[in-house]
Image (cartoon, rainbow, N blue to C red; front, side, top):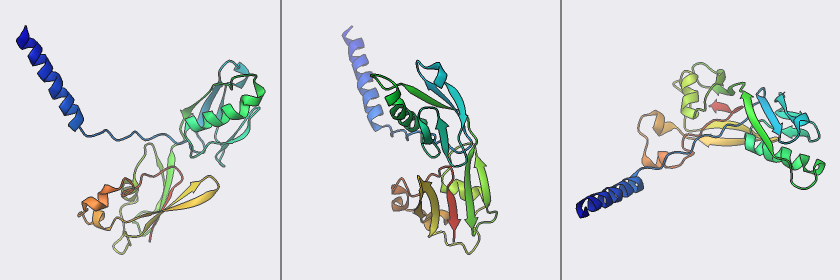
Length: 197
């Protein structure tokens, strides 16, 4: 009996060490709503406000009693929070619980322009990073400046610029410093435009 207890305790200790040494799993990508997506919106306890809506080309939805709400580029949880706050004055006491789910995705669109072999707009069914987008565009041309790639991203009502330097990565000689940053090879979001000078 003493031997079996010692064996069990030894196995538990080994499992604990193995779990501590195991690399952390990367965080899963969170879905960001795109223009054209169809959303199912439920306001619990109020059947009048349960409906399906398409996200308009400008990235908004118009919801009864809440008005116009920005949806594109945001997560369903963020839209739920906004709707709950906007609907709260219509309810006494506790703000309503709102659920937003994506019934049908229009697909994520990104554009790749500049010195690539096949520039254009690409509709994706999954998230990809900058290297994946360059692969879709046939790769870069011989004289592309891959050390100064720019990603234009619309955030709210303004554009932001993300710089990427892929020189050593595309030469097949990335250093640890090149890959250390989680933004070394940026993940693309719907509506991004990649410019390869």
